Image (tube, rainbow, N blue to C red; front, side, top):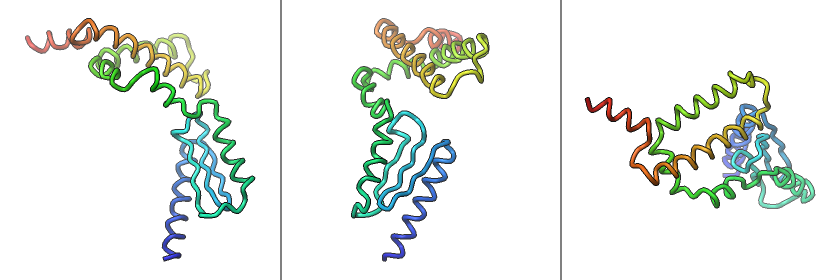
Length: 162
């Protein structure tokens, strides 16, 4: 049974390494843990997994935890949920066609019209995209509180019904 557990652990570590390589991050393998740091400022893509029941090197483990805590946005999505409850996302979904075209036009204008494509860092792209989504979220919530369907959805339905 011990050999099977060791094989599963080695398989897991190899998968974590492959995941981190794809994400452009790093993998640290300690005596009692595996840390996959994707480089993203979120606990969604960073993984700290204990691989031993005993902690053999406590300072080393505390350092690994500090790496994740130093991410300024640790728990960012939990904080975002406090301000934008999931139930309000229905408005964004009901205006999917409108939001898709609006997002495409805004980001194409921003990146190609203002020549920002290839000039901004990954974190800046994330902030820009998140800002566009928040604007869409607010717009969709206000619009759907007054109307049954989105503006382009209404046009689409009127054309389709003919």
